[in-house]
Each structure stands twice: as C-alpha cells, then as structure tokens.
Length: 103
Image (cartoon, rainbow, N blue to C red; front, side, top):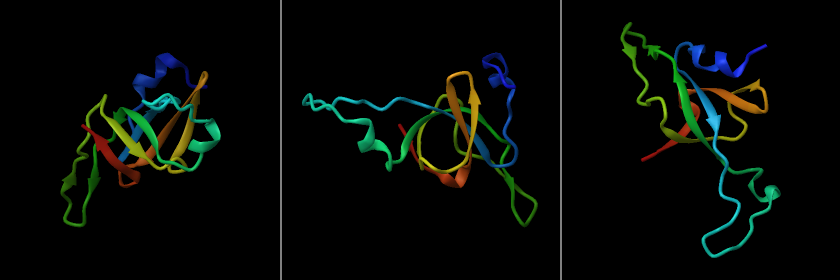
C-alpha cells in the first residue's frame, strides 16, 4: 500500500510522468455552475509530481522530458494508469499522452 509520505519517493521509469489531478473550476466567470457530468469526457488538468529520466532513442541518445516538477499539464482523462493514495488518485502516463503544458 502506498502512503502519502511515499508519493515523493516514486520515480517513474523511462518517459513516464506521475501526475496529481487538479480540481477544475465548477463555476464559470459569469457565475454558471458546471455539473460534474459535463466534465466527464474532457481532458483533465494535472500537476506534475515526478518525471522519469526520459526515453533512449534508436541511436542510444537519452531524450529528456521537457517538464519540471510542479508544472501544470493537460492530459487525456482516460490515459495512463491510476495509483490510489488515500483519497487521491494519481496517474502515471507516458509523456506522449500529455496534450499541453500550461504556462
């Protein structure tokens, strides 16, 4: 069983990234309440917790991942594998499944 204390000891392998979900706003700027059912099929917002060393290409060169711990990213809701720690479900995804980085 993984505890909250252990989450910082997890290092993803290869070009995988450990992500923590960030709750999306449920109320728009104009005050419209967005129901949970409206967000089921949308990409999700995550915080990068840990990053693997990268992937070795065919020439043997390590291709590093262009992310840092604490970055905010958008990833597909159903991509990757879930890791449940307490009440929080983290995701481990391949770097290719990250759709965008939020600057």
